[in-house]
Amino acid sequence: MRDEEQSLLSKHGLAVACSADAADLLPLWNAVHHVATPSPSTPTQAVNLYRAVLRGLHLAAAAPSPQAICEASDYSLTTTDIVRALNGPRIPDWPTTQHLVLALRGRPADLYTVWQIASSSPGTEVTTISAGAFG
Image 1 (cartoon, rainbow, N blue to C red):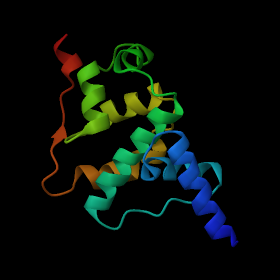
Image 2 (cartoon, helix red, strand yellow):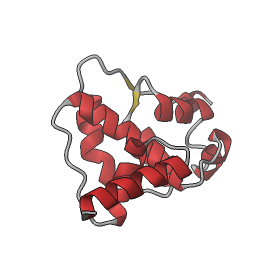
Image 3 (cartoon, rainbow, N blue to C red):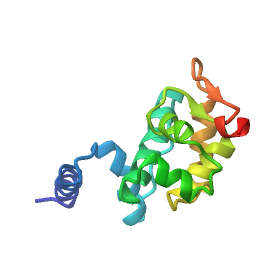
């Protein structure tokens, strides 16, 4: 079996074992194996990659509840912010994304370029005021 085939089977097996979508694990898999995740070539690809990275970080952090993430962010995020960021349809503003990635123990800089492309996608709404801003 070629290395590529074995890698594909391993990724699929990991996704099945985690009850996750393989696309959500791919950015994490690539990071662990020191493989660059291809840059998105279209805004739609950027939105999909953005969501996959967030869901992958969420899974890697042992799938904490929105309340646990809220606490990990020192309440800079609301549970509504978190659910919307993970599930869409809107792309959160950069400060919200940054707080979420940090709360999930990721590196915001790794997602910034993808966020820029995703948030500029035609038809994509960017949430610019966090619900936490209203107390």
